[in-house]
Figure 1 (cartoon, rainbow, N blue to C red):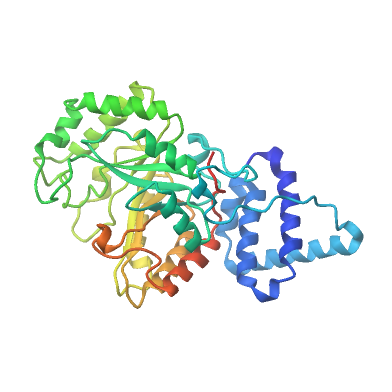
Figure 2: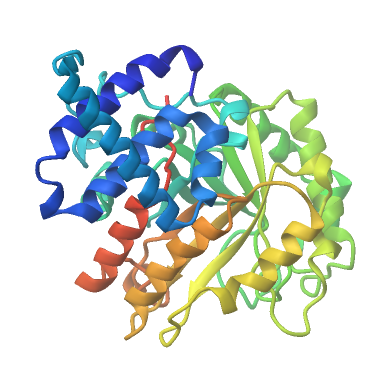
Length: 402
């Protein structure tokens, strides 16, 4: 946050405490979670990250100390010194397509968001970016998403309308850019072979896409050829006539084309799948720090899993050994089952314990919507409550992005 706005945020923090302390005994968890968000706005990006690193008990102790200090000020006759502030917009306010003027939000610039002042909360939905689905997610989660993820194939141009719709909803667009024409994953598509991309054979399309991204002006997260370390997509180096080294060559060529076209508003997200036994090291597919802004992976829990560590820890360690770049979870979800609420709860605890992670996008698809399984956090009241409480405990990037 900008330093010159800090006095106003301190005033707002004091007013929020005065409003919410009376019902504290009725809802201590909600109170502390809400106070955590507002402290993050006051502390700024660096100290907010440090706040996330603190053990939960220490954070509770600091909150209690702050409350005692506020009560001391009240007893000293300082009440009434805080001006009234407009109430925050309730979840779903973005459905009007007009962002509320009273919300300060976060500056939507690449420099600001590559190392964001908190955690980016993203969603991927079948209709993304959709005002109706975003309202539903905000109502269910208690928070507005700040990232809207959607998918484009290489027979589709950059979607300016979707870009603008994302920002109308107060969120940055994340485009998963898949080099194929869709269809059956088992069928090779030699027109989109990685060597053809690297050689410039598809540059007419790539240059047009890059120029359209440049015209959009605001930051766009571009996630090219995700899950490249596995074998199920035609851009795997073990499929479609591709060879070892082709993926890195294709990525670097794309980056160079975008740079030559002046499209410097891209946040490049390199996103392998979680590592599985017997697969090549991630370093084989890494384009290099000069070509990547964020590293990523995916977090899909099975129906019997209750903890996230066995899924993510090894991949996270491999990523962070590879580079100092921030980490973004490109897709996350968990199948329905007895452990879904526990897994969801543990996912948010895992995020707090791994401060290199700057955001995630929840895959809010059901099986009937093309998800194969129902990954939504709303499949049961327990899963929804775990998601809502876990999200409330994070230091989030302030919505809306402007």
